[in-house]
Amino acid sequence: MKVLAKALEGIDMRRITSVLMVAIVMLVAVAVPAMAQGDDKAARKAAKQEQKKAQKADSGPKKATPETGGVAPVDAALLGVGVLLVGGGLVAYRIARR
Image (cartoon, rainbow, N blue to C red; front, side, top):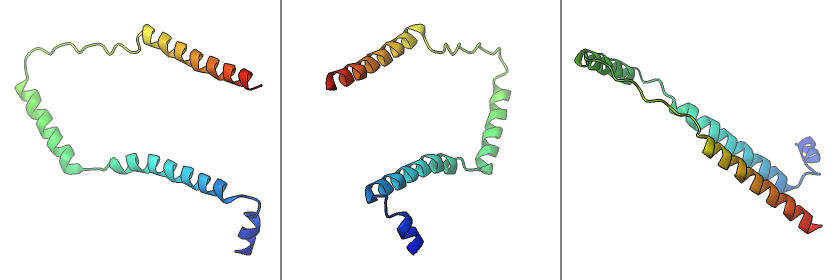
């Protein structure tokens, strides 16, 4: 225990707390979605049965699926403009502080 105390002598408590909080947040951000992916065999079996029933009932012509579209060029341009505005503001702030 004395070795650990000597190693932590130069590190202040605020830094240790910050590192621990970041580690906890990262753990929660990774663990919660992983735990939510449970393997429910009964639900999968029921879904398969429903899908088979739907396929038997829907024997008519299938409709074409809509296109996904992706990102519109206007939206991509607006994102770039926003990045330039924020970057320019940061540069102006830094120059004004000198």
